Image 1: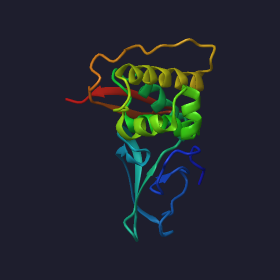
Image 2: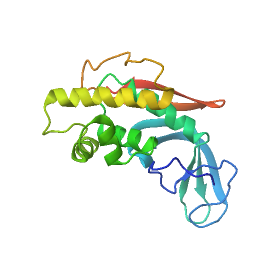
Image 3: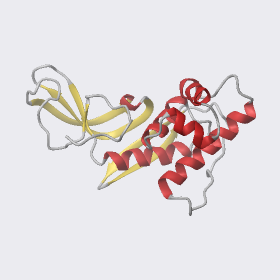
Length: 190
């Protein structure tokens, strides 16, 4: 079983090796393998829907396991889609982005020129309720730029295609493996 990205919270219910056919919980053979959709709750991204992924069920303990090949590419695709969202970043998204690049609270706070307390509150609440509203907007934009730099390198200038028009707008990010690439799209929630 290949290791997950450093710091990204993944439960034992995610399989990294697509050839493993034994349950990670009890070691028994899998009874049922099917293709279906999975909400990415293991990374605290309930609004990210992984489409058409392999889902396995153990014959003995009934444990369910999801197979995610090309995990690094999946996390990069999710990160790119997150920073393009036309709303403020959600707390779990901030945490996912920080952990995707293996930063501690202290390291990200230093990178963005703020405190660990601010980052922790941001991850918990989506925005720091004690901060000036302009600070929340500024740090949201700075984090998006930081993620872009980490993904693409500093030499490529970038700005979100869509700035938040409705900061409270709810969306779902859908990801689907097509060949070797994870393809993502944003779908508004009605």
